[in-house]
Every structure is written in C-alpha cells, then in structure tokens.
Length: 244
Image (cartoon, rainbow, N blue to C red):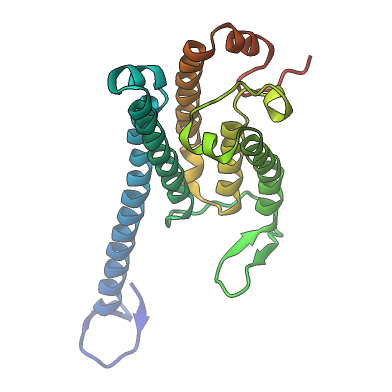
C-alpha cells in the first residue's frame, strides 16, 4: 500500500490519504513472481539431488566386476563395468556441480557492521570476504587430495572405478578414499564460497552418499584382493586421518 496524490481515479479515499490500488496489485504480482521463482529454483535443485541419488545404484553395479564377468564373460563384463563406471562417475559429478551453480537462496555469515566483499570482474557476483577465506581453507586441501589421488591411481581408474592394484602410499597412506574426502571438502568450500543455501543444507546427504559408495567399493575390493585389502583397511582409516 502506498501514499499518492495522483489524480488518476484508480483507488479509494482512506482518511486523509489516497490509496492507489495499482500499487497493491504490483506488490501482489511481485509476490507471485518471487513464489514462482523460488519454486523453479527448488525444482532444479531437487532434480540434481535426485539425480545423484538415483545414479548411485548404477555405480554399485559398475564395481561388481566379478559378478559382471561371470554373467557376461571376462571381456564383455569388463567393458560393461567400465562403461557403467564412466556414466555413473561423470553423471554423479555433473549433478553435483548442479547443486552448486543452480540459482538458490543465498546466506551470509554475520561479520558485524562491516561486511567486506569482492566483486568478480565482468559479473554481478559479489563474494563476502569471510566466505572466500573460509572456502579456501577447505578448497585447497580438497583439491590437493582429489588431484594427487587421481595421479596415484590414473585417470582411467578414477573414471571407470576398476582398480588394478592396491595403492597404499602417498595420499592413500593417509585415508583410504582421498578422492571422495577431497570432493566432500570441496563441496563444503564451494557452497560457502557461493553462499549457496540449498547446497549447504544438503551436505549430510552428500556425505551419506559418499559413505555408501565407499562401503560398496571396499566390499568388492575385498572380494578381488582378499587379505591384501583387509590388511590395508586395518592400517588406514576411511575418511578421517589417524593421528597416531
């Protein structure tokens, strides 16, 4: 409701003020637009989250190497496993990126009266300085773990999830799943960097999915490598490095 002195006969007299009904209608329109926008944002984000969840069973099948080779033959089973690994791995990753970049409500960590921010060149994106600093604390180790995990196992193994040998040195001497730990740290870091509220609150689901994937992979690795992998499991933790 607004206060106007417009001579246009589009409102009604209320006390000493002339109330323009056009202003009220505009506000209603704005509210409806915002509701529709929020609904679209939530739908896009939900589709990405559901995509990640529904692609996990495909990943489970891709790592069942012995079962696939028994059913389809060694060569065909290998190709099917690698193909499913590629589809599930890249699909999971792309849906994951969608959680970060799709429009969603933004949050800001309180910093008192001063709230310095950095404006990205050629964009309208403004990143609070505190968000950037906190995100770097997570993104740098996350990127390190992910990069050196792939270097140790090779890109092909990272894409197809078909392990040729048990790697126990480098970042794999710290945790058994450095690539997934790095991805999780990167998720939290990017969510803070972009102030992405939906992406932040879905973090427990991301951790749960990575945990389920890791358990399934380890179950199949025990079948393939037996006591060698069991011994490795006894020495190195899954996600949290052992201090002693």
